[in-house]
Length: 270
Image (cartoon, rainbow, N blue to C red; front, side, top):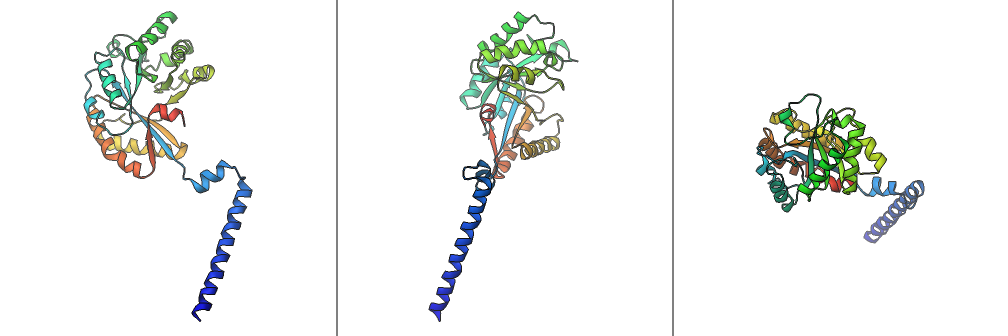
């Protein structure tokens, strides 16, 4: 009797194997033997990539030390004409963080002192724009890309952005658009020059409360759920120490949920 039971179990097992083979075969026929759709949707879970950029390095801003202790691949945007620009960028690069240039651009409403020593305005001569951009890469040779600091007025100007991005392209770098202007011309110029272009999805610290920063970080992950990637911007300065602590606390939890944290260079290669 025991042998009979075992024999029946073997028959049922074989039937299950045959059924499984038939189901897999049907799926392969439907999607195609070499279909990446089948591999991605059935065999591999969709990955979600998140890049976090921290703006305004280069000066005395609070939170710089704390940000350099966050154990994730952050990208630091450095004001090139800041007093400690090279020193901070070199230290961060040695620690494994990615560096990009954070160039001040003319905003619709801003005080002159907010720009620092040099900035690019809509009335800056073309040759001067090109010289300024070249100079920033001389100051920060470790920079992988170029981004705008403020710039709601100048980044909407097609002529200005054509001059800026043409030099960025010559340097074989990428352009990261902070998207401070709703009508930024950067994407159009990058398309024309076939230059890698990335842009911000979420500001993490537009409100200075910890509750808001945690909420914005959650919204960033939701963006990644929808698009499979997302880019957030935070800052050193008044919110810097608190944001650094929040990133240390929250990123491990999100990593366990399947989010992959990358630099902008890594993101543009995906």
